[in-house]
Length: 460
Ligand code: HEM
Image 1 (cartoon, rainbow, N blue to C red):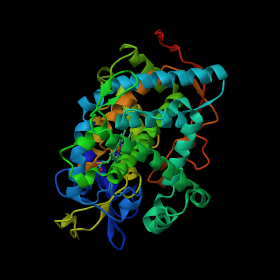
Image 2: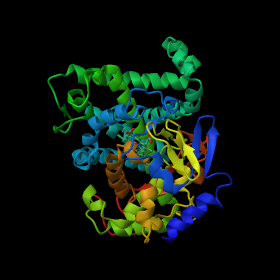
Image 3: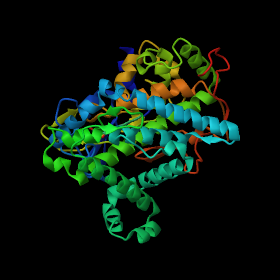
């Protein structure tokens, strides 16, 4: 196809000065070639992560940081059933309740006339939902923007240490041995992260103590199996993988991966909707076609909403660093080069998600690009959720939350407040995309939450 030809041209020519294959360190090659993505991130062949790289988040025993292919496969298999579409659909009711809380927060800010910080709001909102999914209850961060801000800042600070973790892991290991009061002084980011981990550890111990229960009772009276109760009872995991420490590592990964990436997609999308009245108008017109309280199933059928979500995810970029894999049992060939078995090979999501041939004017938010004849081709290459056997496990959960949330908040009338593109754009690489470092977040003044001014449908 013409797309295939132009991809090759880009990979070999105008965008890249060097490459498409570069030896970026004594032991790693970096390759920018869309045609080679499925080889690096294979779904069927054994691919290890680089043990050196997985030190970034420092949760060694989690599924995401299980460097060895077989170990990763076993741990992932225990989680897969829980992230399927039918499994995720079971908590649509929880999402609905959280959306009511979200609505209440918007109403309070409307009443007070203060700008709302959408970054903090969506961080609290998503972390509550993910914790609920994991444990059956949460900290209700959404009802306390101060705590939501603190939790978001704490994770951002921790992620900004990710490069130091890779190169000087001993610093964190040493700091962790300090008494809490000294750690707070020496490394506030790590101290906050340790407090977060301590709370999760308490929840894991509770799950392990409640041996007789397989479900958690939620406040609405419905008992839904939760992820960590299921893991505790899973036949797919050996006893060694059910220890409190191993489960804590899993919980840290899932709660941070869930809230960090998901809240970003939400605030990126909401910013662009507020910044592009035409896009917002088209979206609202489409939403008129479905019921106010449409299900995820119905919302997924809406092409423009689907395009808005895909474009927000594209500009999220997922993991932004060099995400390497190695083929432990086979030598691979790239053009004239042989890549010996065990050699880390990497690429970066930005090179794919901002490939100018695939996405002309790539830094512009343009949902329409997902509606043309080659949109399905593009979908194959999107790297925001990763690729292959280690692709994001939370895709379905993320999509359900995004569809339900964007459908709801896009009907509110908000004006951006002292916010511009530098508050959402990828400017710094700290494992995930960070905007300008002095950003105060995406802020907006809430004008109305009850109706859509250019749609004639009211809110209940
Ligand atoms: C828009 C939202 C999200 C984005 C952009 C995203 C992105 C990613 C990416 C790029 C990876 C691949 C990491 C790699 O290559 O090693 C990943 C892995 C993962 N994600 Fe997500 N994620 C999102 C939401 C979620 C949610 C809501 C959850 C769960 C609550 C989740 C759980 C995970 C887990 C457990 C892994 C590790 C999978 C494995 O190693 O097998 N993610 N995510």
